[in-house]
Length: 61
Image (cartoon, rainbow, N blue to C red; front, side):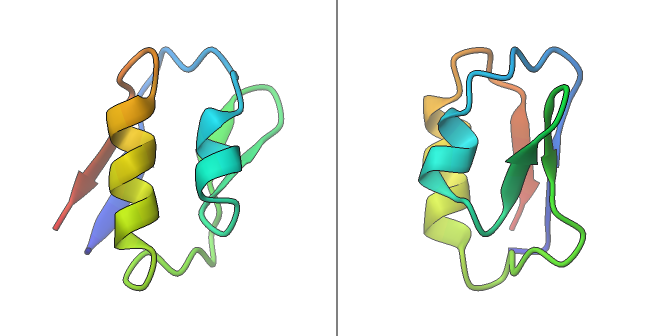
């Protein structure tokens, strides 16, 4: 996986942090951590993207 990001519209439900705490965190809304190991957590990122209730988690493989 090359890149992961969160588009505008996050509702801060926390599901992404639950599924991939190494990648995502939440303050006011969810964000991708700067030092996130996206290359080794691709399955968790895909699951978070698929399960996101507002479909704002995107990625490039």
